[in-house]
Length: 465
Image (cartoon, rainbow, N blue to C red; front, side, top):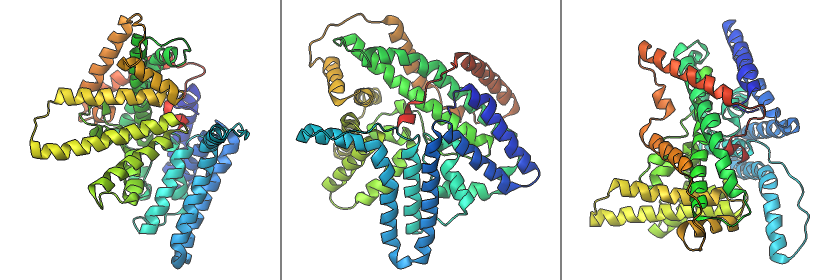
């Protein structure tokens, strides 16, 4: 089920919210949470019902395993490794099996058959989330919750498909807090505001740009210089507004139920360094990679070279997390390399004291991000490399016609990204007058957005990861 569909907006969401509120009104708090849990499972199974067995089995396995940590403390480390391997097995099969088989066939000229596999929605998110819980419990950072709390944190529909990646210690205290079950008109206003703004970003902006991207990346004709640049820039803003819109809607949906989900997006195109970019883009993924991969590899411990190797390896794995393809691995590796260069420059510049011209730093960062997005969007490493060669002049290509209208639109979006606040900041209503004005704007935007929703709405881009 998609956030940008009629059935979600006008059936699933209002019915779920009303059932939740009725249960709370009569003080059946556990029933209210069970309603959210069952509704979340319905939400997940709407796409492909059989895969609900996978997520349910995953929840039961991990919750049961944690009980064994307490029962057999001497074997806790062994149980942890077993848990991590069992969690990684489904994602390895569904997401990477065909990638491995394809590369084995190419390398050894074999002909192993690749089965037709469909990636279960959200498998990367709920798998890594549960791995983080196992690690936190093993380290004594978090406590063992009730099964209902645990299952709901995994399945809560606002974040289930594409994040944010939750840390249990951030959410479970909210489920235990009685204030979560009261009526908060402020949270309702914030939630509806974020939902309307996020929906506008997705269906009006991102989906309108999508055809421009497809014309270039799905075209088998020789690539032209201006087409390559417009295609790259268009995708740069398509994924920005698509993921930003999803993140806004996820936080807004949580607010409707008085649950504060972590901010996952903070104007990343304002960044003046690639380090800052990753502190702003997919914030919860960056947190996961830092706390559970980078630190596990050694983090800042050891030599300077070792630190750079850890950074590069972490980003390489982050690229592989996004997709089973060499273009994703190269995308992650490129970001890792640029981050290492960024750290090295900061260290050198501490001694040299060279003044940093912020507009130039922004331009260098943004250009790097654009080229990396080309590899991310490309259907293969080869296609991505062809794009980059044409864009940089390494390969001679026709200039083509510069589409001025599209360029003007891209320029407008650039200004908007650099000047406007994030929606979660804008909807921090301070007084009644401001709230009324902003809600009126949101009402207009959601009416416009509804007019743009089609009978077959497009998926959010991060659904495929």
